[in-house]
Length: 455
Image (cartoon, rainbow, N blue to C red; front, side):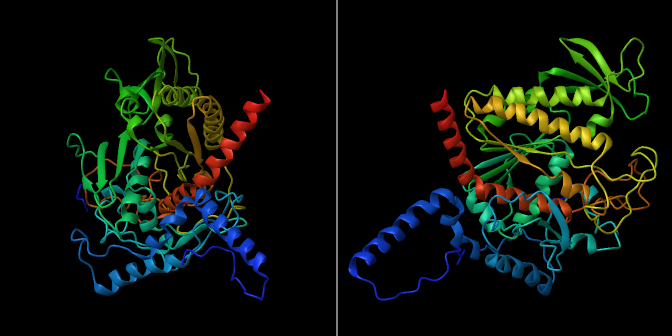
């Protein structure tokens, strides 16, 4: 693959004649505010950086000056956006998609990190409106992703994406969004042309980003004795065994984004205690079909067990929730496709069936892991992309991940996301959560202290 002033809402201070003692009181109060606020808003100390972006990267592919100026203008326009949502108690994950004529904030010509199969514009997708939307939460605003602010917040930090190719899709989206400030260099321990295990480093910020390929989160392998009843492979999942390809590596990262889902729709045989315990649509003699949800729950439970068993981990674990596919008029391997060109409104569709069950399993296992992890000082956060993703049937590559004349065996892709596209909003969510982390951590410490006093 080609490597293709934050303004606080205090208002103006009006001066009026005051007696000396009152002036002293006001001065002390102001100093207290200036001392306390940064403790709750860690991003404020970095706010001045928002207006300074690097625009001299020699690795940025050439484009027309007007196009590049247009992209650069957006970086500075974002300076006027609030640094956090106006309502800190707002659920940023519930809302609607609204038009955003300013988008996109990069193109397939200005970002080399787009995977070929998600490079929809390169391969002839005729419409462009799917790139021109933003997420509007109910009751508040979600600031558009600011790459300079993100990199400053994560200066000296590290972030790992743990999951399947949709997780890698998310990471490549983030690289493209950050490309307006800086491109990373490949610092992978061993070369990996498949990009299943790769590390990127932003040298100016000492920020490292990595992806760990683990489609089932646990130890798994493709069976060699059969291609499965659907002729798309049969996978053996060891539900009670860790996938050491990632569990032995993530302890060094400050942030982990964990996700999985679509690979569980394949035919699978489940192993527990080194013995077959069931399967999902395997059609093997004397093997009970216990369904997809059994394996999905057990896989997440084992993944969380692995994380909670880390001895020295002090970072934050984000669980990115299931992003539904949008196959219509057939299943993924039976001619299903996704040809819509506009988002759904929230009253036009709903989470149901298998998608709802997978989402609820994630939430239940997340809550259990969070409760257990809290005893050990671990922090879990829910990056809930499900509703926003559900409403975007227009955001997938479909047939636009390769040239029509290419002799390739590919299904219509209604799982991954075009870049630029709706998946860019997942970074809006992530940055907002990072900016609010100081407040949340402070509240959790209060609750933990209260629980200890009660006990």
